[in-house]
Length: 78
Picture (cartoon, rainbow, N blue to C red):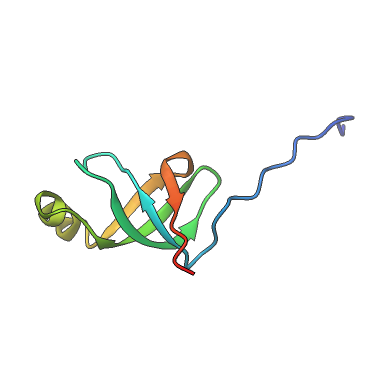
């Protein structure tokens, strides 16, 4: 049975291909990357640039990270 006031999902501020700065579990410092895929509450990020101490961790994860949408910040490079 339908509800009177159905909840609508907010659209994320970014889309696939945007450059973002984000923090993820396991990484010491925030990193920069591109959005590969968006899910309901998270996104897959292709890591582009990290601090020197996080480079080994990024390489071991094949430069991919799953990040919560609340931990992602859009970089305006235009």
